[in-house]
Image (tube, rainbow, N blue to C red; front, side, top):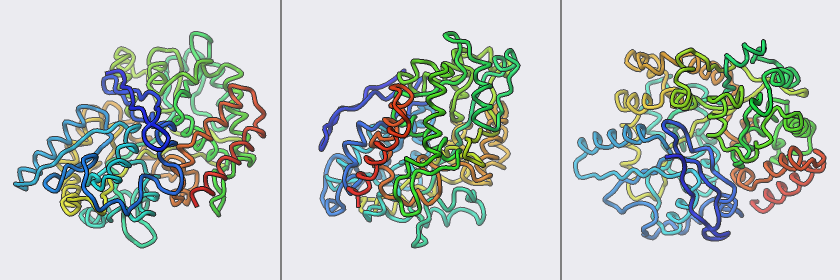
Length: 480
């Protein structure tokens, strides 16, 4: 399946959505969660709907009191199959309980959740973005998952993940299903041919290196996905954070007019103006950037571990020659001293008013059991890294062929995460994860509009940033 069309949704109900690229073999289609969906549905002070509506019964979410309902966003068929098999084993041990697991496209998730909450029939378990947890819990919609965390052996829950969903009241409101880190992936042969080193410490040096491997229109130094708002958001927060910047001040006010943001815009403008990225970058989706590197149309991209499977499918001869690598560190901007990158760690959450909330907690404990969890992770082991230290040390897990073949990718992700440089989407500083309006900023498109105004339309960075600042301040004011 090369893609799937998203549902259309209206401003207060269901209006228009952009195309969500689906799965290409073992590729990924989850990164296209667009502003058309969330922007229409996440406006105002509520993410999905009022908690007062959670007393009824409906058909949009859970399947009724006799069924434990799970919504997940895992796109890979083999991983879906592994989850189904875990469910079958759980049902065999808990006769009389039926579990329904439904894969949901990221672009459809908000639409479905809002409809389910308004119908008073939410699913029991949902997989979502980290930034959603604070917004949902601020409305009193989530049950804590303390029992799941307590089921882990002492010290087994990875230290860089454990605090993410532990709130000020001491309770946990989410547990990541797995984790991964955004890295720079590159073609070793193209860099070797140009005599270029992919590991550069500063943006200026990185730009000069990218020029060496650029030969337009045949090959561009860097493949960027600009078709989807989601992908532009990713680069904005990572590059601002790598330039000593932030998206919000200590009081939560947007900071889009500060120097690190302006320098990020100038850097993006230079990449486009000097044709280091393709002139077609605004029409490229995430999958296209993977294929560009696999096919030699680009020398590098920004990506996650699942990319390895696209390379195996589209360029098996190059994989056999070990032609694909990842850079251990990312460059720093002119105002920065260190860099950050994206931590991909979507949590399972349990709705407080779900019909089978108790069973949901028990199922999650079962999910993280050694044999079950191993069977899930090893379906896409370079992307789905374990949240439990003991699983990384598990002999059977370590013998997985993909883990051995792509060991440098796994090791690099682990080192980056343990260094503290990996942060969830939109989070330049950890306190940003506490901002309940983060989803609204993400979904509004203000960051993407700011970037394209400069990099495509040639607008002055200061003017574009000021426009984005005004819009963001209004979003925060409307939320509050």
